[in-house]
Amino acid sequence: MIEKTLQVAQEESLVFSNDSFNAHEQVVFCHDKATGLKAIIGIHDTTLGPALGGTRMWNYASEAEAVRDVLRLSRGMTFKASISGLNLGGGKAVIIGDSRKDKTPEMMRKFGEYVNSLSGRYITAEDVGINPDDMVMVKQATDHVTGLPQSMGGSGDPSPVTAYGVFMGMKASSKYLWGKDDLAGKKVLVQGVGHVGETLVKYLTEAGAVVMINDIHDETLNRVADLYKAKIVKGDVYSLDMDIYAPCALGATLNDITIPQLKAKIVAGAANNQLAEENKHGKQLMERDILYAPDFLINAGGLINVYSEIHNIPREDVFKQTEDIYNTTLKIFGRSETEGITTHQAALQTAIERIVAAKSK
Image (cartoon, rainbow, N blue to C red; front, side):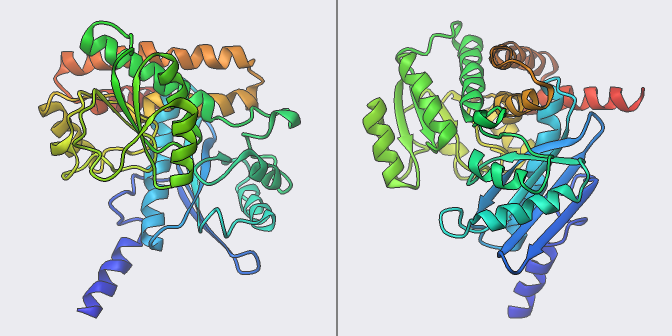
């Protein structure tokens, strides 16, 4: 039994035979004993440009889980950039560890050295567990970094723009399903109230929605609840009476267990890779008449924000381009209905078509 368990663990940690491997161009494993750095950089596709994607620091249960996450995340960034019309490829990085305890300036500088060794094929930014101050440390070792503080000429924390894009996707979903994009009175569960989730709560509260919040950190929950008069919910949140479910924490929350419980009619959130199995669970949502706003489409605001840093795009234009997520979301819903495919498949095909066209030039 022990030998079998070890064999399964070894197979799950492989790259080329990993279920989440999708013809990735490059996967880099980074280790530095002195700083405790254990990181993985995934470069999925650079057809449209250099791979740009944030660095996530998370206390993964296993190295296999970290490998799977970086493969899924980097692939998603390829399609996020493509469907948003950006000349970027898809990449992502993960650092294994607890960001609240293990992260140090020395670790971030060492990580920057590894990013620099890729000569611009991968450009990093912040993600879960990483903030603009960490990017300052990375910047000391490489120029291939975005998401720097505005005081340094950077675009700053991308989370407000990410939240705005999700809000636009949510309004478009409401328009498509209910005929109007007014969210006043709609019951919305925001799962995960970190930087993006909290800002989304702000937008929803200002729009008059009835907001419920859920998070693993009680301190954060209480602060956000007090600030926006949101209702804290715990336990079995998926079966709650709600109109919209907004997953804004980690991925794979839409799965065999949760989908049958959902009472929401719309799923629109900021988390990456919300579908545990894309085809299977996208279809399950469709069969239950739950409208799914594809995650890599509506959470693209953060990527648009850091892209602006590279090309010196004014802040107002960043929000204008992010606002257009509303129109793109409606187009994806229309394609889904016309072709009889899931909304995820419609978004994926739209993104792939742009990449294929670029390759044929």
